[in-house]
Length: 116
Image (cartoon, rainbow, N blue to C red):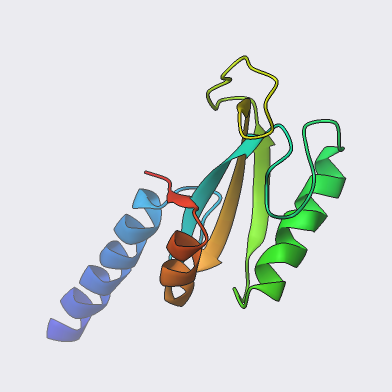
């Protein structure tokens, strides 16, 4: 009888944990973002590059910096556009990246911000 309760509790616990996670981010991963700039991002792309070019450049950059398992989830327009022409001004594009939990320190050191 106890085995049935234990099994039911375990299944409910697993289901509740899965329902709390972001639908795009696995449990052992965290999501970070980068606000794209006009031309001063460390992977040498800008808002004139295609999404595919930027995605590949970001993933290659993170790999070169020793961040293992990083993947660009999306590039959206929900960032802050500063409305100036300087290289360091943000374009309004936001690059979302998922990484394994053990890569958090590297992402923060590189200037990425953790998504909430």
